[in-house]
Image (cartoon, rainbow, N blue to C red; front, side, top):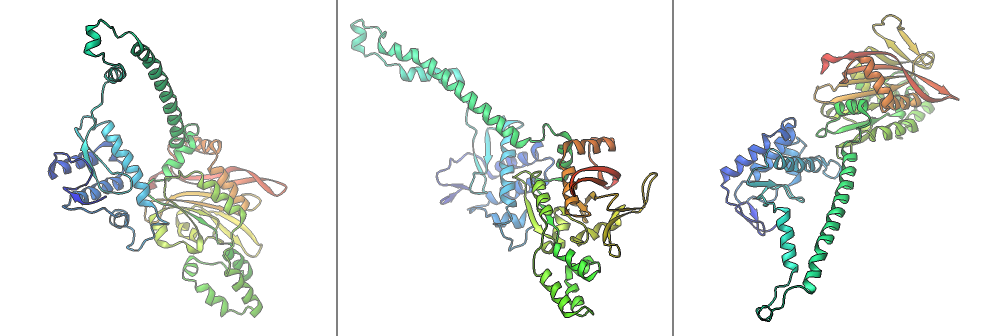
Length: 446
């Protein structure tokens, strides 16, 4: 950007504003409707504003903003965590929106040029009336007759008149072309920004779950852990899973050396079923590209993430022990009967017509939508009796018809926190549909 003089880089136009006036403009933008429901973006603007007004302010670094505004650790990896860049894009849009609406009469505007994060102040460009611009265009094209020509009685009725006659057709074609281009661009942008116009139920659910300023973590099941449980025939607790203490327990158990080696071989691989990958692919389609998102495996997921982020847990307790965190909040508890080798769902408080215990033949999956443990974000649990059933639960959660039916069942426009118990239909062993069996809603958790 070059040497900084009075908070502006060389080559930028200085404007006659004092530091106090510049800060007042920043505060007016931050206090506007555009930032009323986005405290994080408001903090972003105020931070870069304060830094930009410092004498001899250098360029503000992305790492600095990530640490100071978004609470990232000092050594966070910007190549895999693009939260600053994503929010900067949205911040520029909202600043522009302010100066097009409530700030339309501001004589000076502020901007954050792309490629950096330092504020720049400049005069608002005066808009020239269209008819004046057209007259100037004609005047520029029309030749001025010389004094000698006028004295000899020559009138300007030759080639310059033909040029004048071409101006309006050319201008009309240009305007028509510009209108068509703008219309097509507007339609494309509208589809990109509002893909849910024809899907109101999905829009209501996913807009309530997602947050453009909070990362969404999609956590794939750890099927290595599930296979290990099948071999040892012992459930794996979350504490043992996080601390990896189960490895020592296996080595000190009475299992044969060959069986211990089998378990070690299983745990040395990151096993994930195709159904889980397909489910994650469908869910990623519900998250806009501009929203921060992160795909990971259960064994690499951390306690900090589930306390800080929006989270989607794909799988039951056998392959995803993080589900245990929510046992105390849930009515429908997924479990595994090791004696019979089958997944089950326990209904803690059965209502009329409901069963206290559901087996594979009666139910296939549970969907739970809850706040995260710190109540700063949201969590979706998708626990099926197998990977196909989990995939069916994802299909339910991404279907306009299914979610519209669920919303009608809740008798509300806004989706509350809820649990849904599903039964799937199968054809030749393949799940192709899921229907609601029972549900619970928790509106007071919001």
